[in-house]
Length: 365
Ligand SMILES: *Cc1c(COP(=O)(O)O)cnc(C)c1O
Image (cartoon, rainbow, N blue to C red; front, side, top):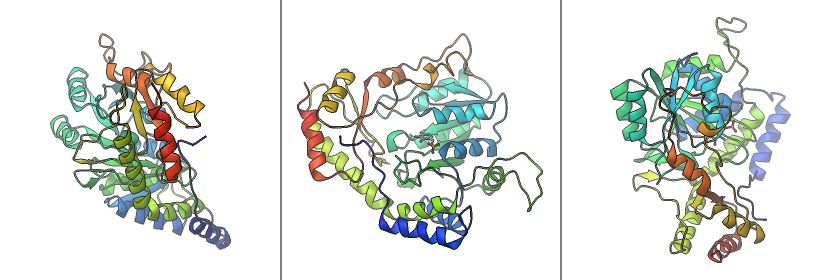
């Protein structure tokens, strides 16, 4: 089976890990600091705080932005559950607004409607889904107009850009994940990035037991730290990110061309002002489940990302911060969850495998 994703750890990364293991300093130390500095520079941000995973990065970022119990955070229903859970970790309530059909990202027009109909929304948690940036100008405009904090979930968008600006530092704070399937992996890992010195300082405290000096604690914090072992892998992976993203884009372009005229399939599209890094290459078909088994039969892996929108999960159904007389409609997210199918687009696909994927989809009727 051709896998949808494939983490590849090179000899260079093994050597870096070995160096850390030999150094005797295997927890959080100088290698984490170097990874923070290089990752942050590559994403055009001033500050970075490495974390144990993307979920802890989200949790710390929201707390650092002052999200507190009872607050409302506007977000997309079409994402991995961690985005929504991070709001709940803070005791805050998610308010869902629908997505755009073309990009699968939070619709700024729907967000505006929710900001007007639901008073007291403190922040917008955006997700650059599948590696495609959100319409950031529209959200920065909402920030100006409504005074909301903008949090970017870039867990799928390492190196992606909006109008030539890297995602992560366009809003107030951004987070990345280095889970095994992401465009950069450290096994498990994450990073909070920001241009705000104050948010960076609060995050750094939160991820390390709220500590001030060595054993001085004036607030509650967590152990969300990254290890030097993970950071060593991350440093190697970061160097390969531009080439790996370029390979993802080249494979996506090949799919675009080969599948353009296939009846009944809608291919992913990227507005001209955005650099899509194709964490996923996601097709739409009204016959999605049959397409998936057709691909399974031909040895082509595929994933439904995501089969249920967050607003429809038992955890959040009827338990969000939307007004009770106005349950979230989220029609586009619900439709997307029934039609999407992600096919292999990882940078280690061989030419032969790309041809096999194209052939398998091409023979679907
Ligand atoms: C992967 C992912 C996360 C969570 O990251 P982990 O490192 O798995 O905790 C959060 N948001 C989105 C959109 C993701 O894809």
